[in-house]
Length: 107
Image (cartoon, rainbow, N blue to C red; front, top):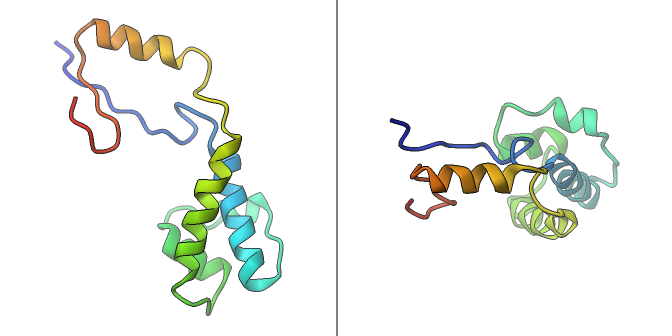
């Protein structure tokens, strides 16, 4: 019997890549004056945000992380919701008794 399902949010439940790109683009511009492309940002994927920003804005102070997270929160305002059908899938799983959790919540 299936007891729990886990999903990655980015690109799975919602189209969040524009949010990610915008947050990195604004942060890098604020610290370097340079505009970076989506491809340049994508090329840094594989490490965490700290590593990505070290590569995109070398020599930036540690405060860059605070600014990045604020830009990331601000960029989320453009999200319209999950992909079509996600709500229905989650409801079906709930009705089937499959536990889930939301960032830090128990299921």
